[in-house]
Amino acid sequence: AKSAGGNRYEFADPEADARVITRHGLTTALPTALERGEFFIEYQPLVHLGDGSVRGAEALVRWLHPQHGVLGPDRFIPLAEHTGLIVPLGRWVLEQSVRQAREWRERNGGDAAGPLRINVNLSPCQLTHPGLVQDTVEILERAGVTPDALCLEVTESALIGADDDLLKPLRRLAEMGVDIALDDFGTGYSNLANLRRLPVSVLKLDRSFTRGMQQFPADPVDLKIVEGIVSLAHSLDLAVTVEGVETGAQAEQLRILGCDTAQGWYYARPGPPERLHELALVDATG
Ligand code: C2E
Ligand code: CA
Ligand code: CA
Ligand code: CA
Image (cartoon, rainbow, N blue to C red; front, side, top):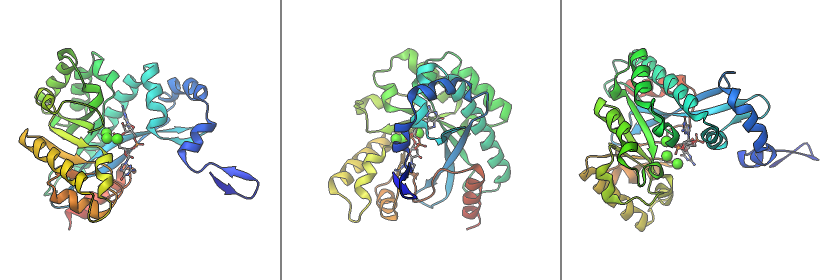
């Protein structure tokens, strides 16, 4: 909290904000927020570490609450999961994002690095919802976007101990050409050998691993761990994306370690879709 005009305090950070908004207030407003059009999506670029080109973006949902302003997903996704709104909300995010990818593709068609791709987060509740595969197919068809432009991100914890019923829809999507990424990798306790069983093609290495690389030289233990994960991932034909890259030193060390793609404030904060297009265009023209 920072001081604003002497005796009043203005909450400048989301955590302080969280304390003043009651859980109850958000729970009652949430079910109708989708109908009222209060959600919007920011996009954060995914950058190829080898050549620095923008390859796509992750869609990150926000809620423009009429009283409380912009709320981040950590504030309302758990509530949406609890109330079941996550299924229609997740479908909405997917539809918007896929349409956005279509627009980027049209405007950026000649880019040598290839068309921009879109990453969308899937909550565990969406995984168990029977309409997932059908909805995804329809959304892609309606937008005229091929499945290979889409990557669905599922957290490692959602798939720990997953049985075949849970994996079936993901397998079908993967067979169609949709990429599946294992999000927040390294925060759960999954058996590395288990990776072979999962229909994933991308590992998203959690921010906690890249934190030790903000300075140069990096923590040697962190380097060893990331090096090991990257070599294991590559031996299983998985691409490695790193999250939370905040400095040039991190980016360089992660590139040397063989990571494929990076995401983080060093490149860009999440922002409106036009911003991504600008970044990608700058890139394509050198
Ligand atoms: P995530 O999937 O791990 O997304 C990455 C988070 O890291 C985002 O937070 C992003 O803004 C933040 N981030 C990106 N670069 C940096 C960096 O360099 N440094 C730091 N410190 N942070 C960085 P955000 O947008 O608050 O999203 C939080 C989480 O909410 C996401 O974590 C994801 O699990 C969830 N989420 C977001 N959108 C959706 C959605 O549409 N559906 C579902 N089910 N979950 C969503
Ligand atoms: Ca994610
Ligand atoms: Ca993540
Ligand atoms: Ca994370």
